[in-house]
Image 1 (cartoon, rainbow, N blue to C red):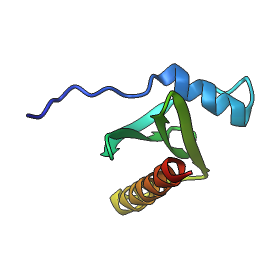
Image 2: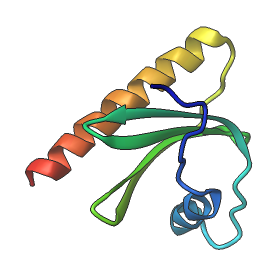
Image 3: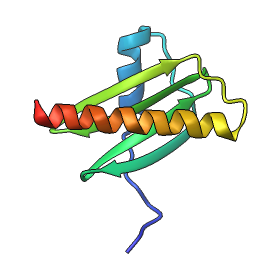
Length: 100
């Protein structure tokens, strides 16, 4: 059974994590949001309007994320390339965390 409703990590949590990187004045402005699932862990892939792309997931009550700056989405191939890279990195990080 499939569902059109999905649970994403709340925007305020993502914004709070980004404020740790960029300072208290950072304001999250979402452009595109995707979600994938790996080993029963949902991974959010987010593109922001200020040229950032990131992955974020929650594992054992802890949030993990990685941000890439300076992403310019010129065409659909750029989006796909960045998207697949983010997924690969997130899954590799999740596996590393689980085995640590």
